[in-house]
Image (cartoon, rainbow, N blue to C red):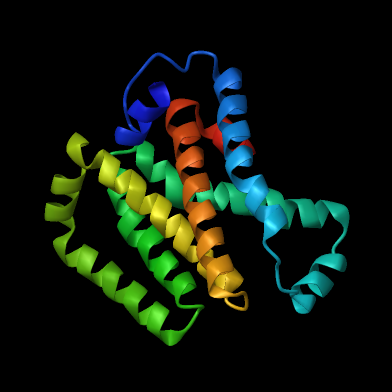
Length: 195
């Protein structure tokens, strides 16, 4: 029942999550239950250049580059704004949206120009956007928008795969983003980075 309430309002304030480790494990297992069956069914393309690059790194470099750095970056860009009101809106419009557009368009000029346009637009209308979006009633739409942006930036990872595979994996990234967001909001930053 609590999960349905959280889907309707992810920023719901509740004391239900006092046992943080228990809820971290529950959310992580829920995320794995949703994702593992699909990962085993879908076939992935090979990315030899990336594999060669990774194989040339030692184990600590691989761990830092593939596990620690992306987790901290994703937490700051996509989930930190969920817990902040005014500064969170700044991070969303000055960092998350431009960066996401750049990634969604595979580092092309179009993504760069759209990101710069979004940034400039926010700078000109910052006061009114901040005032409106920092209200509590926009927390749920912002939560789902950030989850969708998180999922869409992964679209480029699957550009060589069949459409059904790409759509499925982006959907799974969206579901994972929801779990990660719930962990960040209700359990805390430390657990969100570990997830």
